[in-house]
Image 1: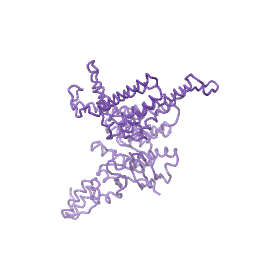
Image 2: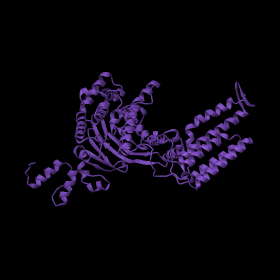
Image 3: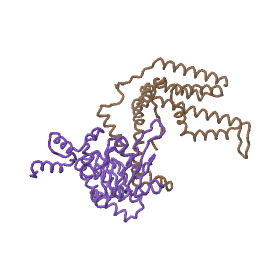
Image 4: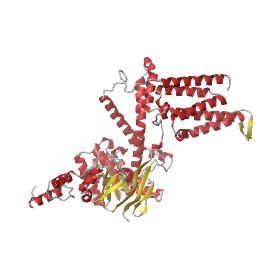
Length: 267
Length: 287
């Protein structure tokens, strides 16, 4: 049950998108998000959509998985859609008691929905095609200049990798603890709110204890292998920008330029 | 129909996805009242998935579990009620302790059964007695105890529900030899004095050989062999081919037989070997 949660899931593959340098992908995702928010009219939106569809096709990730990423956020999307329909003033189309639906409202709502969905799919594409380790490596390298102002960049990246590494472990652990307490007759799905919150105690206490135990074990294991932070540390896998990364940057630059030009012309 | 029985039990994890995995397939299993059964098999052979069906924690993809002749999945209430009759002790159960005192942790199960304070008190003390915990430990925090003591507390937590079937998933894993023997003795004592059925999943062939009445060998989600320890261990070549071993005594006996001594193939305890060897020597028994 808990195992079905997909969070920052990575699908190994051999596509160009998989092979791109994680730094390239991070920057491109950022550029994509900026361009998406710069889009104003049908032309710019369609262009962003075409770009996204092309990326999805290149990634070779199956369409079902892509759509599944939107599912947990469907409530927020629907909520924004409805809010925008009712609270945008303009030329009224339908009028019911105090509720007015305007043409502008419909358009804005549709735009917001398209923007949200494209935002989610675009960012998920990053985690689908990049392994968590590559992602943190890339992030560490990108943030490297911040070391000059004494930002603990390496430590932050290490914390992020450890956190990502332990999500599945802790989920599995939670599953086990839930089963064990159920075997002793624990009942998690009946009674009022207070009773239900109390019923979580037999899960949370062992879970925290085991998380602390794991943290301590990991710290000892890292120290006994002489880990002492990022200073002077070398890497087994060196990140290297390739021709395809240059190509990706050019495409990204062109996309941004086109979007901003069209935007200034009001498309 | 047997006391506890499964028919055609099959469990598939994440069906219809790329991660689909058949954990157990078509398991027909039966246990009688008061039997001591052993389940052995490799990691990933489906043992743990199997036992979680016996108390209704996992729902089978197909097949059923019968307890006392009734389908345990007939209704939601029935499934929950069965958990008090079929007690399941997970692997490393000490990681599930959560209460402030040992007493309260052991009382968790009986409390969920809706028993009165007096009954709970009695059950907790009785269960603590079965696993050899002294009165003075009951007021301590379970987190102050040693690993072996914690394990006892966790086992007592299930025993306190006085289950008619007690299932234990590797109850002796990670304990020293002394702790191992003590836990096994505690479990036997519970079985003898309550007449409960005990099903023990284990890796230790020595444990299995010494105490179980019947044995089930799991291999790739199915029961590859079953029978008395003598029957199973006499097929040592087959056991080896699926990556399991036989008790060390059985190996010694097999070697001696290969050297030409007249020793039967179903030796699995030191006592048996000793008797046979002494008989061969001419009936003079002296250690």
